[in-house]
Image (tube, each protein chain N blue to C red):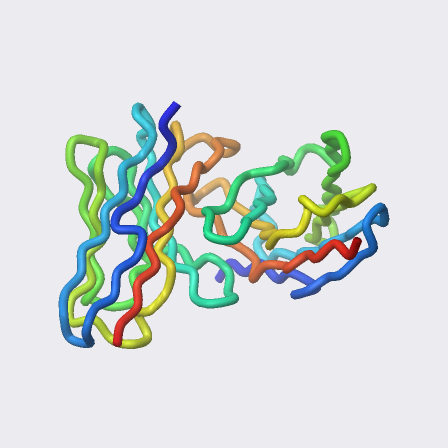
Length: 116
Length: 112
């Protein structure tokens, strides 16, 4: 079956521009997560959605970062006025239920963002 | 705040030998500990997990052990093969939150 998909796979943008990253979770998964992975680093939690609401957005690094989810499905992560330090791979994951302790998170392939 | 430390950052072992990766966590309320494998250009994939009410879990060549008292857990890969080469991440989740905190990763290389 279809896994988590993300688009674009690569994005190069100029400093100061806005970017939108898209995540299509596995159908029926109610929980959706965004992570950031800098080169050679671990995964940094950004935000968690349960349905269309975001009960935990504690990882968003600044007010330039925002995310939304509509119809309990697709999510977009928006970065405004991009900075060079925003360059990273942005990973999305979905899970059948974010409230279940052992619910597996299924990751997408990520979007590699490069800010020049 | 919650924190997960992972060691070593890189590990090279001879094919057929065992590999061990260790992690410690800070929040004693953590109750779920997954391990992920990430191959080049792909997202992480769950390979094994363990809950806090279990001390050890095994799945073929991989096993995970958990010491709740010491707040550390380890991944053991036996009879390593070239396809085991990847970056491995440990993680921890505590019951009052839905997010998972990841370690910094271990790059495992298997020498032929």
